[in-house]
Image (tube, rainbow, N blue to C red):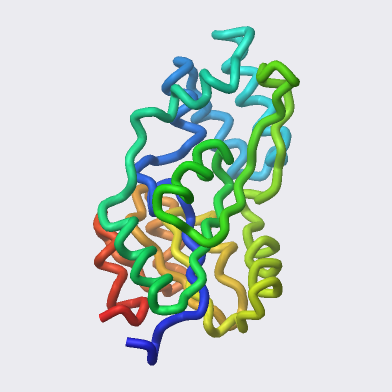
Length: 222
């Protein structure tokens, strides 16, 4: 089992450990808003992560001027884990692998997923709330959507893991930024055409499945 086992596996959250397209889209669905045009412009590089987050928040506040932290939690109440998420994390950790979640999603959501699967570490973006729990107008960028490599490098330094013992797993073209030199990347369950094309062009392994147990042979678990 241990021959090809990585020392660290870094998972994206949405569409990988969590059976949801995006923790941001979940909030748009909850508040009845649509940011698909903004997303396309963001992907084209028209504005930064922080600007995009502020625009998202502004859209929600047009519908609901005062949004409480509890409203955010309620929006995520129906979200589920991807099949096999708990099991693969447990097996990786039992084999001595450090399991982290590196997500450009919402911290309130990612934290709950991390707790459910018992990940060792997690990092995600988030919101500012006032002392009474009301959502402020600006977000908190910790993981740039197209710059996850900085978080990965920091993680490897903390746990003293060489890049060639890291495997990153993501479902979107932006997740390829987790693929630092010397490491491996696995595309899992890509849904968007942009992801399928990017993974194909990058020549990475792709697992077209909604069952994380299908990653096992690629992670030295079988």
